[in-house]
Image (cartoon, rainbow, N blue to C red; front, side, top):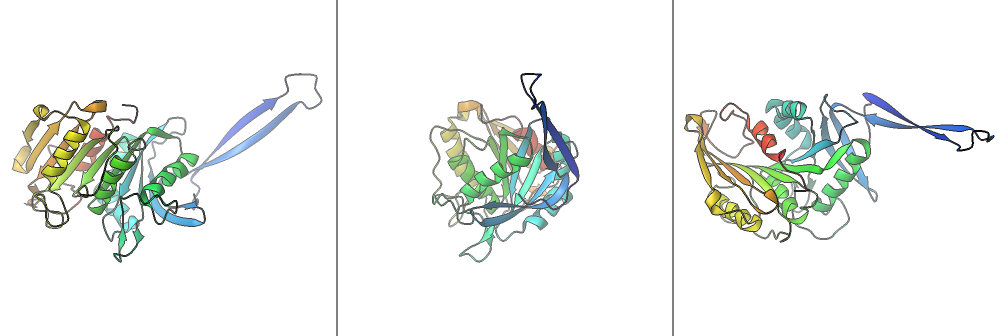
Length: 309
């Protein structure tokens, strides 16, 4: 990982001494420098000569002594990681959630491929080129961050907006041992996604009923949100009888919860009819719901799960 600004430098000193106190070799001191950057910075990850970029936010509450959760937040199709970090993290206050929740959040940059815009492909083509395989890239990204920061590898989460949500669903299906739970904002699972039948992942999904890009009830290449919910209930073996529906304050939508699946998995759907007084559309939701911003609601859900469940 390329370090651009050094904010805090921690020195870890390891003392090596000879077992024989009378030995002429005596003691050897060695120091390993670990550079920790707080706040929002631009970073890169390199593998086999290929480099990709991402924006990183490390909260001021970060303590190198404590294993720290990691959220990977994927932008939508045609998105820019820097602008996405600014809007989602700063304007929609996800970085405030990072501070209180004491987790690191990173925003990877998608690759421009045949579609002509920066995108995420949740399929697995078995390539070990990080430009060609976004699943493999995500694995290398986690490994690279873990070299510098004390990451709790049982508490790595994937979230995303639109096409980024498709990427999060793909990781839940194809890399479930790496991802503890996922959060979706106006995204969907692609119809051709196949999941590891022996691994289970909890999901929280926010979707507007007036989304004209990825319609709630499906269209053309996209399954409906209810179809995807049922897929995960079946995959995780979550009983339909566990369904609880809550009307959100102000009539802005409903929250539907399902619980008790394999591996203690759950699925929560926020169906948003209204956002900031307008029809709930294709957005990263930011308006408070029952007193909490959606980013906080998402973290409150994700933080309940580990890959050890």
